Length: 165
Length: 176
Image: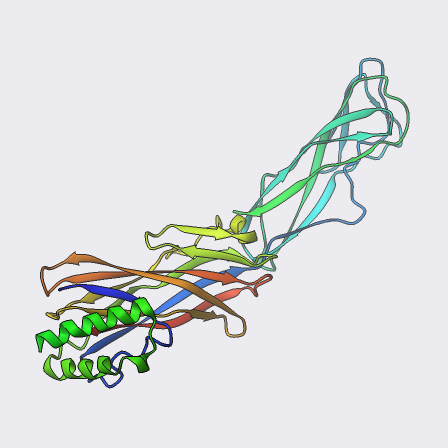
C-alpha cells in the first residue's frame, strides 16, 4: 500500500480532510501560460494588378516578363506596344510586430472568354513585419503567349498566401 | 492506526469512483484528521518544477483548442492549427511538472484542479480536461519520489485578444 492517486477534484470531492492539521497535506502552486499573437492578415492593395501590358503575339508567341518592380520585357515574337503599361501587383501584410512570415504565390491564367494564356508569378518567399506590425511586398510574373491569340482584354486571378514562420 | 489508514484509502477511492458528495462520507474527514495528528511530514513535499505551457499561437478566427499531453506532445483543433508552427518561446510547450516526495507516508492522493483560467489582464481563456499522472523517479517503499505530470486542453476563443496569458493553480498532496 504505497500508492498514490491523482484525483481531479470536483467540488464534491475537495472536502477530504477539511480539518487536517498542517503537514497532513502539502500544496504547490503551478502556473499555466500561453502567448496569443495577432493573426496575420493579407490585403491586396486597392487598384494594383499584375499587368502584362499591351502587346502583339506574333505567330510563334513568346513571353512577357514583369519583374517585381513592374518593369516588363518581352521574349520571342511577342512585342510590347509603344505606350504599354506593365505593373507588378502589391500586397500589404499586418500582424505581430517584428515577426517573420512566408509568402507563397501561385500561378494562374487570363482569358478574354475565347482564348486563355497561363502565367506564373514571382515574389519574395519570406518577409518580416516591422515594429508596427506591417509589411508589404510585390508580385511579378511571366505570361506565356502561344501566338495567334485573339485580340482583347484578358483577365484572371491567382492566389497568394502568407503564414507566420 | 494502520487499519484506519487503509480504511481511509478505501474511502478516498470510493469517493473518486462514485463521485459521492462529501457529506455522504462523514468518516473520511474524521480519519484524515487522526492521521494528521499521528504523523506529520516535511512541510515541503510537493514542489513546482515547470509550468503548463500552451506556447505561442496566432489568434484564431474560430474557436480552437490546444491540448498539451502528459508526454509533452500536443494536439490542436480549429484555425489555431496553422499557427502552432510559430517559433516558440524558450520554454516551448509542455505539461506542468511537480516533484512529490512520499516522505515516509503510506500513500496519498494528489488533488489537481478541474479548470485553470489564464488571463492577460482583461481577456481570459479556460483550460480543462485536466489529466495527471505520477511517475516514480527514485526511492523505494514508502520513500519514493514521484514526478507529477499535468496536461490540459486550452479553450481558445474566436478572435482571442493577443497578449501573454498566465494563470495559477494549486495542486495538493493529501497524505494518509
